[in-house]
Length: 123
Image 1 (cartoon, rainbow, N blue to C red):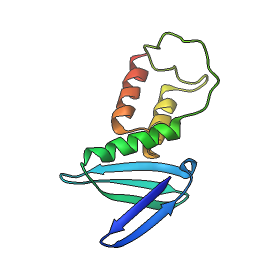
Image 2 (cartoon, rainbow, N blue to C red; image 1 turned 30 degrees about the vertical axis):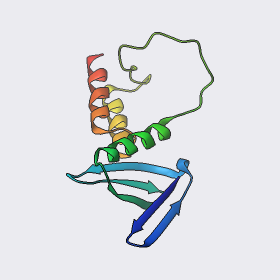
Image 3 (cartoon, rainbow, N blue to C red; image 1 turned 180 degrees about the horizontal axis):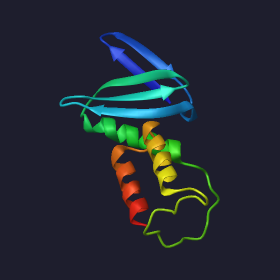
Image 4 (spheres, one colour; image 1 turned 90 degrees about the vertical axis):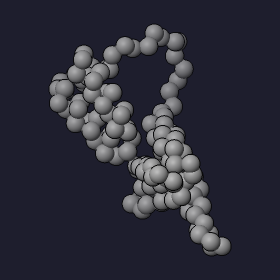
């Protein structure tokens, strides 16, 4: 991934592997948006994203890339209607804690966390 920051006539370029991203955060202002990537203890900030909605779109795309895991192809299955049950030996509270941790690390957005909590508590 390459982040280019321009200010006036100066330019700063940061380059890093996408798998080094630890978290991603977006902020949407009235006129512009901002995305902050945490990479190996450092922060790469993309300012002045216009239109501001794109800040969320960029963060969703990065989160999707972070959560993507290569898996061998399997035969198609019917989509699950409910969230997966809590891990064997684990409680609903532990699962909620794990989901909150994923949100805190930027893997899940607040709305994704709420959706998973509803599925877990309705199960």
